[in-house]
Image 1 (spheres, helix red, strand yellow):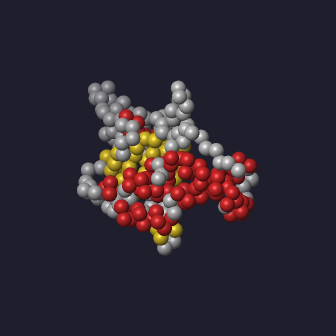
Image 2: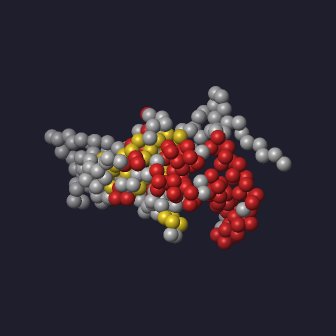
Image 3: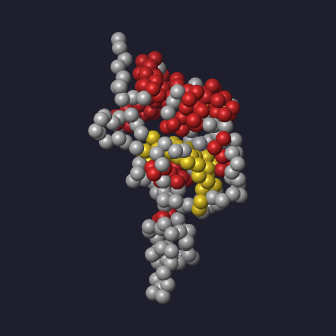
Amino acid sequence: RQLQLSELLDPASRTFAAALQLGMLEAKAEIDALVAGASFTERAAERLYRRHLSSYFAAAVMMPYARFLRACEATGYDIVLLQRRFGAGFEQIAHRLTTLQRVGQRGLPFFMLRIDRAGQSSKRYAGASASPLVETDRRCPLWQVHTVFARPGTLMPHLVELEDQSRWFTLSRTVHPQTAVSGGIEAEFAICLGIDAKLAAPLAAACGLDLNNGAATAIGLGCSACTRPDCPQRSAPPAGRVLVFNERERGMSPFTFDRNS
């Protein structure tokens, strides 16, 4: 009757691992009922869903809903302070923030994204944000979620504006899962937490920013979906647009296109 945890785990990961095992033991009946109700036809999907529910239980043990929401509202969703108060990692806090949508006790509607250096996403939680930034597999290189790898561990706020003029306030930083042994490959990911800029005023990280009218970086949803004509970072023309060639002129990118096509 021993619980053995890897010595590679940091304190937050150890707490999570212990809570995960607790959920598999103490909440087995509830988890089984939810899995059965989902009526999966594939065994792999069923097992992934079970793992997700067990992980949700562990996060709820570490960060109880009501107490966590009160702490968020009292601190201005200060992620560093929330990490210290609940003994959690940055990624754990970010994920928990996407789940605060209980009727009568709603938090702010965040989304969370986890990507690697190649821009591939391994976690996407839209929450109640309805943000197109988390739904697409294509992302803009001008978005600072891609640049945090050059500043490991630094929390980088960024105000961005999409082509539909919607604004989003994002917070990004790198994380290193506790999996590497000495001499092994150390995994590194960028975690991005985002929210509609119109709702970001209560955030401590947004203090002093003009979220509605201040300078924002114009980004798109990937080059093939973006029709901004003057982007110096463009790597492909917009899908469905006709390329225009003029031997006497050279624009900011090699992909000059008909804006009306």
